[in-house]
Length: 329
Image (cartoon, rainbow, N blue to C red):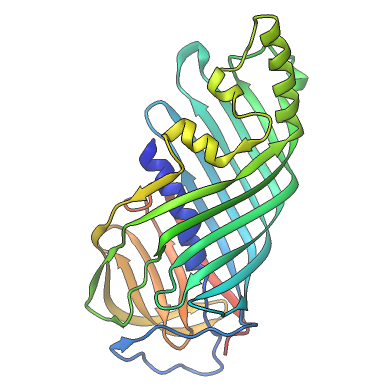
């Protein structure tokens, strides 16, 4: 389970690298040279991406968490280029559905989750030399989640309370001491490279009026010597502190991600067409592992990513993302 949680943190950071830059062209672009260096971004550059499918799987033999996400339009804009990082901002909406399950006999939990038009905003700090992510933060306020409580061991609920709509507010930030990315510059066909080691630190809060209500009811029940929440769960309420939760569940909020040797490979260049245009791009693959992304030198970054990445990112079962428009010049 710890490996899965590490993978989820990496996913949040890597996805924002994949949502980088590309330029629609008015004519057939020239073929890229054998070697290309890191592109340069400017304040005001803006790119829009579509995610048709992003399947997350956080599961082991005792529990599972599946979430299927889609984003119709993810806009990214460079707000600042000061120092050694680019600062990007985004505001978008996303749709999703999934489930949370544990497998513990009579104490099992089975809850389905769904949301639509979830309004989310955030910012990203991108290392200029590698286009890897240094910091990623996002937040949303009073966004509605629909829950269907199929099974839970805590309270006997009437049927009308098993289907709930709750509102959640959160702000979460991830920081990497070494930038997290998949590109290696200068990029050359025929080259292999590593996934670099780093330490991830997560902070932030998650809160809901429902969490507060559950906390109050459990507190009263505790005074009557009849608490219904495990002590470690009750201690996290009513406002869940991400650092505290990770410290309680994993023994700390600093997660070490080890180096993975020669997981990336660039075999060739090829012509790639996405809604934003047609590009000559480097084909970057997870060598023999089933995932590909395409970096176009004339565009400035990745224009498409697709396939299964669970070998190095354990929570990603599938992803299909592509550029739909940009102002990059």
